[in-house]
Image 1 (cartoon, one colour):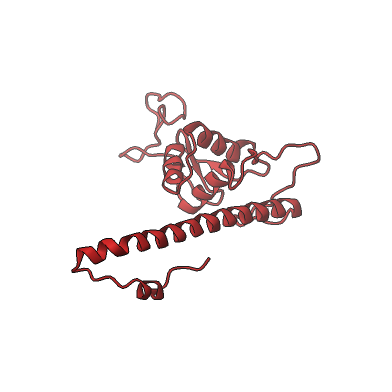
Image 2 (cartoon, rainbow, N blue to C red):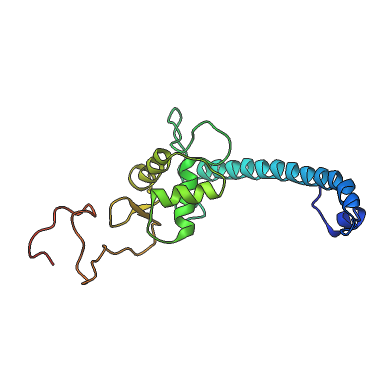
Length: 184
């Protein structure tokens, strides 16, 4: 399947001032659009398949992944924590990719919203669980928990505790224990 070029438009000459000509040529334009969209779907699936193959090969070879961590292959009989049995990218890989690409402290809701914009319809629980696993259970960790309740960040991002407008560390609602009188 080839991509659309200007030659495609040369074969479909339309007189935009003639409604009858527009109506007559519209089915051909729709047909070409459908062909291109189907080609895109095929290529998108092929890219996802190759992304998964490369990920498996990287883990099995225990080579550095693009984010710099070494991926270890699961031992025989051990489940691969990132596999859900479905084709394409797995939730763990997707959330780690978003957090590393955003290069900031980020909440699960923001990660989920970004993934939805990119066409990945994951539940809030799936995103939260994948983020927690990436930061706390994965060996080696693929992300870190950032200061503040429910925030995650890339491993190499410098993070600082949240501060109030006066420059004091925020406590209580941020998961840092109860605020105490005189705490600075």
